[in-house]
Length: 234
Image (tube, rainbow, N blue to C red; front, side, top):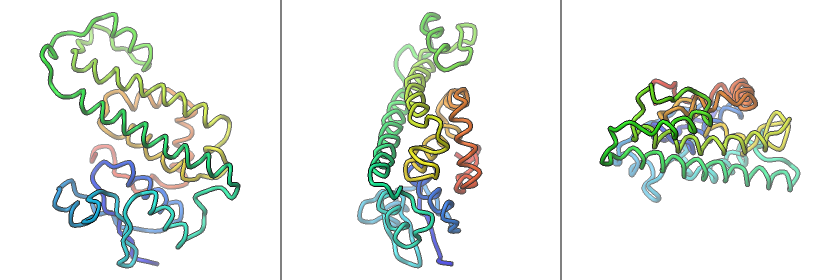
């Protein structure tokens, strides 16, 4: 077996996409993790971005390029449909899932910056609206502050994107096919970050959608989680 190393930060959905691809292709690998800028520069001196995948000393950066490289070197199972139109739909969903999640992720992080009045209680009317959307009790008696509500509202919007995914999935076991593809790698990596990461209420919101719960279990049975770190290490 080749010697494979995946260089990444603690939380990086693009890296998880690569990890899942390696798991689907049953390729064991070692994960090198650091959030230090100096390590990122050393591992990825050209782009200074992760992930970087190393196979027997050869390195490739950028998750999309890495997946193409993996399919060239280890073609089974393929990560794209043999049908061109289906493959194009899989690629579009893969791109959409990551760009959409990254946009909400950046907004969520920005919402955590302190603002005057953050410690004051949030409006009960707004709390009730958000509670109906994310499927849990967030009434005024819980004492949610304006800062906490800001985060919850962003996750509430992210919930609409989860509804989009439910529609895209339909009755199929995987997106646009009966076998996982690049679309599933991207979506599953995003959902796993939501499930295990720090975004307030995101796990409860995800689990409230039964088709996505079932989808997560199907992917988990195939990939074993792609060696994604447990929730308490994120």
